[in-house]
Length: 43
Length: 417
Image 1 (cartoon, chains in turn green, cyan):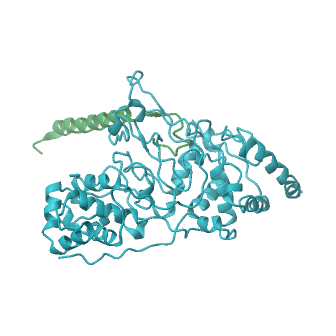
Image 2: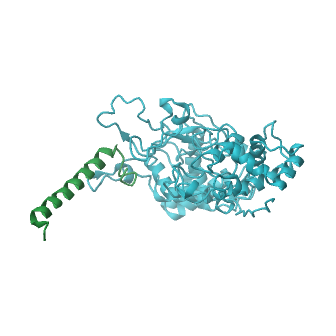
Image 3: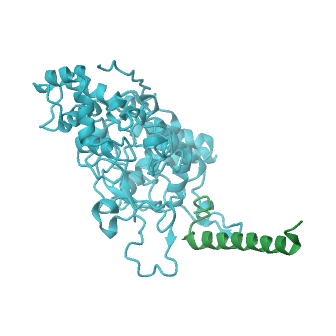
């Protein structure tokens, strides 16, 4: 395994970071909907 | 005992609402109606951390017997000529137009109809050779079996790419004062040219459309018959297609039309109660008014996805006015049962749409950075939570389904060579 555990760990943290960034983008995009639950949620 | 009491009091309650509800132009959704002011909140609970007040705060349900009594009474009220119906409720400032039979089709003076013109228009309507790739026609999206829409959330355009909006039905578009969801065309003739030359739709150019039609001998003969000579122009093509589109109007075949015509037993109890709700506590007539069941105006239901990936600013893209952000044309509700899905981007089925209106449509708050945004869309003030219960929603649905007309099928005509 030429890549090694170190490389694998870095790759893992990169993937986690991207996921977190993507979640953050989603949160930034989502509006605040006062009656979200009444509208079925997810607005 | 309770039912008996209701029977005895119902005429009084209805009588009261004739004065308060029917006669008033101040249509406060929670007030008025047959049973007076609704007490709220009925239920206060927490769902997934949200206080779901709007969802749970509903009008009280009646017993089956009470609903039947109500329907009988309403059948009597609406069993008279439309001119004698109690006035529906609309908010102050809203123009009230009574429901009724559809008037005759209006035709522009510079494009009067003839049988030959309608026939030529129908051929062009079905002819894929008018599109850039030669495969897509008007009939690709406006399908008679599907209420002259296409049954999709959003239309499939050139290259089978999904477009941003739902295909509106072309039924009764002859009566529309503005065409397209955003009203960017004033006439059907303008609409035809816009669709033919839209790179995302039929993806052609004016020159190519004319050239394609001109090359077909049968069309040249058709143009000579209709317009007096063989000259093919985009104006003539548009006029012929628009004439065919204008011929697609409602037939008085729906249960509601029959009800209007005096057959008062064709509508179910549920549909009759739904008719009354439509005219009163459901606040529908604030926008869905008149024989066409539309005010022909533009409203913001807060479904524009402002500032988000699928943002669609609607009427604003035509007028450039901040107050038009997120506004879309009020669609006619005639034959609405056949034109699902609904809204400008086909977000909902009929039940979903009713649930959204019941919630008052999404109320979006300004986020940080949007405090002074002049384009931040403001939801139409006519939209308010309705507090309708499940039976109310079922009744409204039944009424809307009573607007469904006879299914019509359209056979592709023989195209000229």
